[in-house]
Length: 328
Image (tube, rainbow, N blue to C red; front, side, top):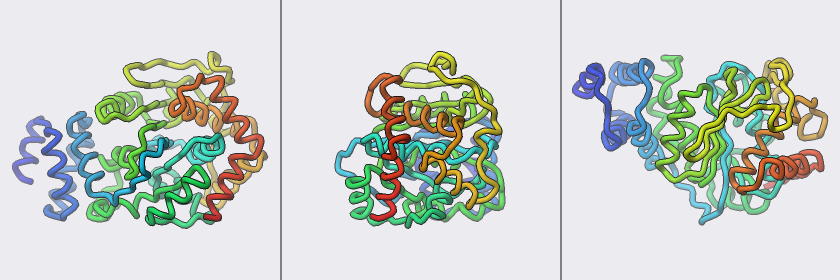
């Protein structure tokens, strides 16, 4: 590690193979805590290169519990977190809207790190039982169009860095890796990021690993399409700034999409929206994210995708999907 640290301090970068080997060594606890903190600190001061990001990703996927859904075309909807906005569980709700529209969703998530209630928090509170039994997950995907992969059950390598991450208390490379290490390796992804710069990094990574992606970032800092501002959209080989007016939505206030102050209140918001008791602002932000996910996996127009999302939410199909998942 001393040689690696000296190179990094001298502004050298790692190849993809080197990054992969280092992360595997970290998971095998070959370095002490001081060395590990020093290594992580380097990437707090400069951005990962695409090669480094690719190598770290490959290592975590190689070390994860494999999940093979036998060629099923699916999509993951996930945000990086770290935007500090404490919005409600938009991507998780959108996942059920997409599944209710007839598309397969393999959602990868975890407990909240930068928010009060992450996807795992709210689903666990509402009664979902986490599992890494692949047969059970396949059954959920087959019968409910959606399954949930709780990250700690699939990434034992992360246990080696957990205490150090907690003590450090800062966003590290592992926060960036979370959204791109879904062990089922879905071919489609709607990914929300907290900055345009990070969006560019993810776009380069996903382009190189053959994932069909849409990456979104609201210009006022949300890691989703928040409808509180226009938003950046990265698709394969293209970046555009999307006007809310152009896609038929009005700007809303940040206060209209705040999450709860506790996991239980976040769960109440989640349930109200599924029950068609959400506000117009809450419904619309779920619908627009759902529509872009449907567009990503289906290739349909945004307008057609939005109509499918509305039918799923307002006709109760998203709620039926959620209830079905709890039964399986």
